[in-house]
Structure formats: C-alpha cells, structure tokens
Length: 279
Image 1 (tube, rainbow, N blue to C red):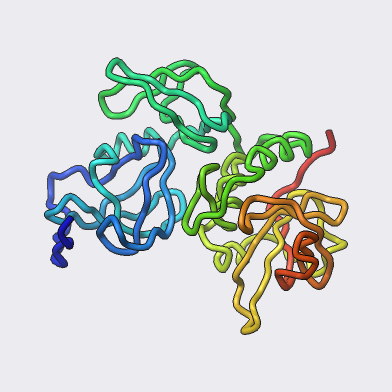
Image 2 (cartoon, rainbow, N blue to C red; image 1 turned 90 degrees about the vertical axis):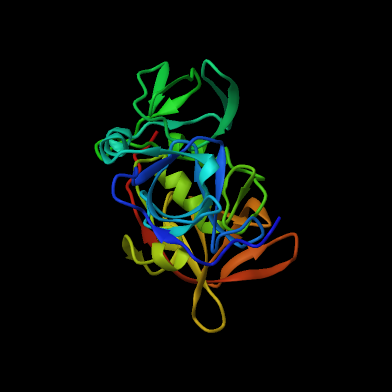
C-alpha cells in the first residue's frame, strides 16, 4: 500500500461531523496509515467527532468519551449528524459479554465487553438507518447506581489474562490505562485515557494499606513520570495489565511480581474514584 498523502482538509459544511464505530474494534493511530502507531481503540458503538478528512479515506477524530485524538480508517465507522450522535450518547448501555454476537438483516458479527449499545430497547439497537439485534448481557450504570464489591469484582475478573497491547482497550489486547478506563466505564465512571491523566482525578490515598477495593494505584519511573496504573482488589493485591491482565501483590514500595521475584513498578499514590457497597 502506498504512503498516505500528507495533505488533509477540514470537514466541509454540510458533511456529517460525527461518526460511530460499527465493528468490534477500530485502531486509532497517531498518524494516518495502517502501519502507524496505535494510540487507542474504539469499541463498537463509541462515537467520535470528525476533525479532518483525507483524500485516501483516513480521518482525524476526537473520541467523544475522553477527548483523545487520532486517525482512523473511515470504512470502519458510520457518519452521524450531531442529533444522532447526542441521541446515541443519551443513555449509557454497555455489553457485559466477553464476546457477544450482534446481527442486522445483512450480517452477524461479534462485539466485545464494554461495547456501547446506542438506543438499546432490550433487544434492538439502532445506528443511523440500521437496526441490530442483540440479546446478550448488558449493564446500564448511572451516577445513582449502587455498585457492590461483588459486581465490581465480576467485571474486573472478566479481563483476566487479556494480553497486553499498547493502545488496546479490549479483552483481545489492552494496556494498563485502557483496562482501568473500560472497567470504570462499565461502572458509570468516565476516566481520561492515559495513566498520566487519570492520576488527576479522584481523592488522594497516600498509603497502600489505606486503599480499598476499587481504588486506582499509580506508579512512576525513575524520573517521577507516571507510567502505570492498576486497580486495588483488597488483601494487598492489585489487578493490572502488565504482559497480560494479572493479579500481583502490592505494598508501599510497589508491585511485587512473584514470577520474576522482584518489584516491577514503583508506587506513587492511590486515588479513590468511586464508593462500593458491601455485598
């Protein structure tokens, strides 16, 4: 495949300025082109604002759920009006199946855990002029939803052994902050995309032994830069994406990997983003 042209153009007046992901995952790349670095992913049903359209079908977008920007292949999304986009975002309903099937009159295809289901009525969802059938497990979190520790743990454990993938946000490949972001979206809590951004949210918990189930723990490199994040699950344990989504021990020094018999991440601080109720 040839190199994409460098010149782009802004979206012209009259073109549909928003779009929605209509495949299981869409790689969002730093620059236009299939071989460019993936910086994040869209999951089915997530919406974006279209910023720039290039002649070779690549478009620059801004993710509506976290403001992240990058380039996507326009063949993997459907364009929307602003009104359609707002309607899709009006109610947050997400797939709870690790991998479920969705179908239209034309075809059937898989969607993944954390996918958004626009205008879902319990059986059907609607995107632009297409009607889809989905009868898998769903969750519809809100700010008023009481979240139990048991429900929280059922969500995080669905991601166990998902392979690490830079920029990934799905059970088939996920990075540390993608993991925390998708888990929290299923709980009705929006988070920024990167660990260095997520640390700016929530209530500070300075000591590991003061952290509770659901708190996020952040880790720094030798220069003091935040480079990793994971989720506290109690009993001195943390679940995080490092090689794969795994559970390790944690103390005030950091994460101890028993397989490597050493500390792999240096603890900076924990943050409390939400309150969980007892089972």
